[in-house]
Image 1 (tube, rainbow, N blue to C red):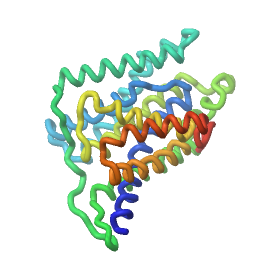
Image 2 (cartoon, helix red, strand yellow; image 1 turned 135 degrees about the horizontal axis):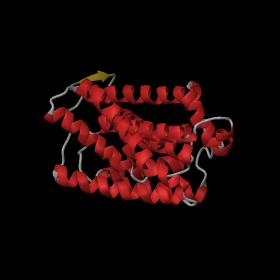
Image 3 (cartoon, helix red, strand yellow; image 1 turned 120 degrees about the vertical axis):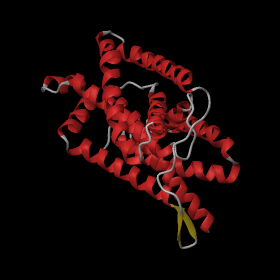
Length: 289
């Protein structure tokens, strides 16, 4: 019984991290209807920046957070302004943008390989030690990750629902031309959505890299998981991405316990195929908050 409870708790923690990451991918798709294939590489970029801030500059966890998140936001704004915005004047700009994001991923992956080499790296944990709840041993790191991820998701949901910029993002996601007609600056919304998504990638990197390894091509597996989550939850649906991430995080923990870690990616791909065959729209087929 205690083993199963720990598996469920571990799945909840994993799902919460996946939710933070996948919400960034869903946010960009929800506003622009464009899938950012470079999102996993931006996650790895954040992980390497955090590693440099921690190991080279000697910053503590709080210092890394304070420095990393603004850096990632600026990176997102610059990439959107310099790479994506010029493409929107083209007739088939959505396909062109997705191809550009794929090119960005290849550039970032190889750049990080050249700078940092193929050796894997890791961030130190935020907390050490464990405590007992009933018969279940829970790590301080796991509890902290769950709390931070939960706060992040709640803040994002409140931002999208009540903040003027969040409401503008929802309006653009529902009707881009209508939003432009009522005075919403669509280009600014796109830029801030992209910047916010890279911040979420940075938060996910801070939460996940203390327990996983950092490598130049390591973002692709997480990107694939985020893609499955977004499709499962419903393209552009933040609520669907949240629900799907928690469900699939628990499924992943059960798979690791029963069959081993080598079966993680095959199971995710099978889930993707099943979703596409049974319910292509996902749990929520429209923008939902």
